[in-house]
Image 1: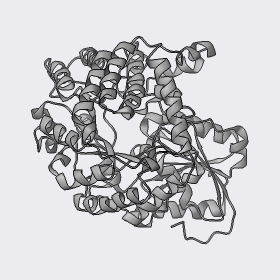
Image 2: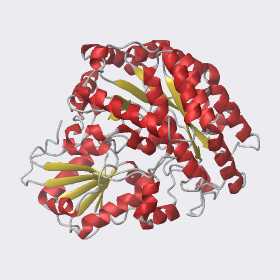
Image 3: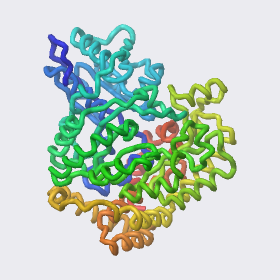
Image 4: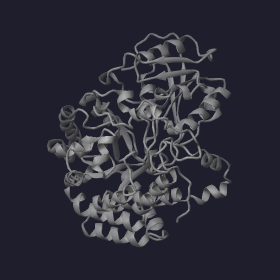
Length: 542
C-alpha cells in the first residue's frame, strides 16, 4: 500500500543511495567480468520508501554505486531522501552537502541514523526507525512546505507499518540488470541477541512477516524486468527467525519456481542451528536455494557463550556445515577476530577451521562495536571504546591491537591464497553441488542469460585462466568441476575467487580496513586525490 494521507501538493522526491566502501562481501572486482554489472544489490529500504510516497508525487532513484547523481537531478528535486549504513557515513554526508548546495531540503533514514542520529547534525530531517507513523508525519510536513527548516527535525517511528501492508519496493525505478544479485525481504527481526549485533534493537526480536502472496508478487516484479539478476538474496535478518512461517512460506516459493520454470536461484542468511530443520532444508533445496550466509563468528565453542551466540553450538559446527552441504547449500561465513576470549592460539584455530570446514567464502573482520548493541554498552562501561582513525577498530582489544591486526592479515592471506580457495571450491564440487536439484533448461535459456554467460565465460578464460598468476589452481579446480559436469560451478568459482584474491592482495597492501564496519579515512583521501591513470591500474589483470 501507498501512503493514504490526502496531499494537496505535487512533490518531486529524489532518492539517492550512497556508494559502498569496497569490501570482501560486495564482490566489486567481479563486476568487470559480468558485462554491465555496476553494483552488488538493490537497496530495499529506500526502494520501499519510494514506493510508499503518495501516488501524485514523482520519485526518482539514483544508486551511486552505479552512477553519481548529477547537479541537474538535485535541481529537479523538491526534497532529497538518503539512507545507508554506518560504513557509508562519509558518502551520506557528501550527498547531503551536494543537495544543500542545490538548495534542497534533505531527509535521512535507515539503519545508520536510526542507530546514531547524533552523527548526522547536517541533515534537515532525520527519520528514525522503520516505515510507519514517522513516515506519514514526514509526508504531511513536505506536503505543506519543502523549505529547509531553521533547525533539524527528528521524526521517530512509534507505530511501525506491518510488513503485510508494505508496498512492493520500487524495483521499476532501478536498472536491475546493473546489479550482481537481486534483493527480497520476507521477514524482519531476529529472536537472538548476539552481543555485537544491532538488529534486535533496530528491528525487534519478534520476526514480522510478509505474506507469501506479497513475496511472490515481488518476484513477479523482479523477473518482469529484462536483464534481471539470476540470483535473488533474501535480506531477512534471520531467514529462520520464525521457523513455522518459513516452513509455511517455502511451498509457495517452490510452486512459484515451478510455475515460472525456475528463473531464479536464491540465497539467504540464517543461524547455524538451521541444520536442525531438515524439513525446511529440503524445501529450500526444492526452491533452488544455493547459498546461506551464517555468522559463525568463531570456531572456538567456549567463546560463543561470551558473545551470546550459544545457538551456534546447538549442533556440532562441522556436522552442521556438512548437513547444510548435503542439501546443496554452500555455506558462506562471517568470522570475527579480536573477541575478548581470543588467545595466541585463536589464529591457528581459525586457520584450521578454514581448511577443515572447506567453506569457500569467509568474511573475516575485526570486532567493531556498533551503537545500540550490548557490546557497545559493555565496552562503554569498561571505557574500552576508542575513536582513533589510525586504528583498525573502535574496540580496545584485550590483546595488543597490532597483534590482532597481524592475526587478521595472516588469516586472510591463508584463506585466500589461490591454491587454498580453489581447493575449497573443489571440495564443494564433491559434497555440495551434486545435491542440488536439476532445474528446467527453459527457465534459464533467455537472451540475457546467454549473453551474460558468454561475456562471463570469455572474461574468466582471459582474465583468470590466461592472464592471472593463479591460472594454474583455477584450471585444476575447473577441470575437477567439468569432469563432474558442473559447468556453472566453473563460472561461480572463477568470478568469486577472482574478487577475493584481488581484494585480499589490496588489503594486505594496507588499502582496506580490517573491519568492514570502519572506514579508513586516509585511504578515502588517497582515493579522492589519486590520478586517473593510477585508478585505472586497479582494473588491469593481475
